[in-house]
Length: 259
Image (tube, rainbow, N blue to C red; front, side, top):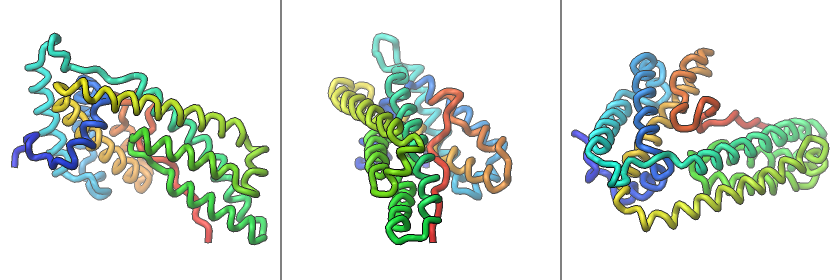
């Protein structure tokens, strides 16, 4: 069945619209094009990891509809919106702070697991639980901010705090605080702006659908690249048009497993 905006369930519209509000039509369309080209080359590989032809077809349909709408829109309409660079920078800063804290906690978990006493072992398990819960925010600024809060709290757990003090923990904690504050500020600001930008809703919705689809493709590509030891697959699906050349996608490193 050919895609139409009216087919999107009511409960999904708000989520897509909120996500798409942060990205411009031009950047979103450019990313869709890159992802579809990558799928033409590596479709068989990524299909085994969840992103199938049906998903690519939907991406193409949504891309085509958004393209048609942008051609019809005029500059006076104000509908050919641009990506919020402030939002992108806040997300990137949050992910950088998260990555730094996760790196510290990952190492601490390994060290505590080798201590041989009950308290250290329990602390290590708590760290692992946090790492597992903070692997991905799916680009949601509120979820990412909550993850930063959780990581900061984990750095204060007894035994963890002592290790963190000598492994960059205090500076990492400050970075987490600042990044979380910035994320919440910009996310709240965009939520308020929703009420004065109703004409953009269909554009936002389509941009949001595209962003989610290209992220899904990126996730599958990273998984396929790991399995086949072929970084070229992940590189082909990189979200460079959304986040710039240094984008790391929505995935993070895997968390340690303690037994």
